[in-house]
Amino acid sequence: MGDQDEEYIKANPKAYLDRYAHEVTLSDFYISKYEVTKKEFYVYVKASKVKRKASDDYKTFEKITSDDHPISSVTWHEALAFCHWIGSLTGKKYTLPTEAQWEYAARSRGKAVEYATNNGKLQLGINIENRFQGVSHKVNKYQPNELGIYNMQGNVAEWTKDFYNKNYFKNSPSNDPQGAILNKQQHRVVRGSSFDEKSQLLYYRNSYPQTKSTIGIGFRCVINT
Image 1 (tube, rainbow, N blue to C red):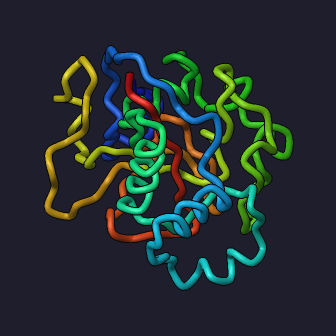
Image 2: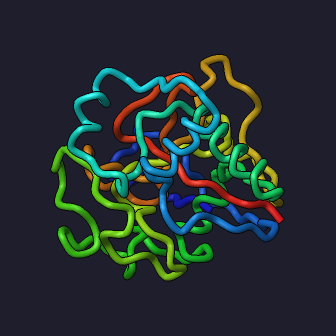
Image 3: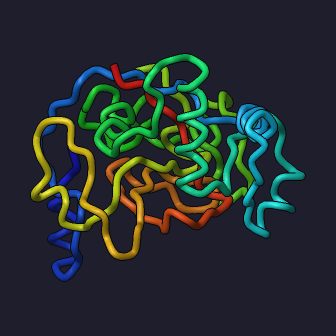
């Protein structure tokens, strides 16, 4: 898990990389083939009678996306609540993926690939959107990675279950890491690149306040066995 990226460090000696390479072993799990769509999320909103807390920028954005686009502008709490709701209907242990689960799936069982695409490379307009289009696309538009999972690179970045700590990779347990202990900022780990930014290596880590939302962040669920 992670990538030391020695060439980057040599070129940027003062930079700090929080993706320190280390070995991780995971228990079995299932992960969603697609990002959660607008249609799926609004079924939950209607059935649960919850109030939607979309950001102001999403109101305009929502009008130019279809039901088959990923839901975005959801807080971490809203994303987790959706996964738990699915679990309550099915009797299965639905939740958000841990950061380790997300990366294992993005890397097609932990392979040393740079991008979570069908071939580990970026081919604009072929296996990932052209940059800075200003809008997401349908969750099944481009080819999946080797595990058959769509859009772990591009479309929207995704919430994970973990709290963020920049030093976590250096000290995390080797078996089923669950993320850092609660941090004061209450930032959660966000993984993947979104349509509104330059595509990053799949090892790239980001964080975002768990009570905030943005058009560039969505989510998918996992089932822990």
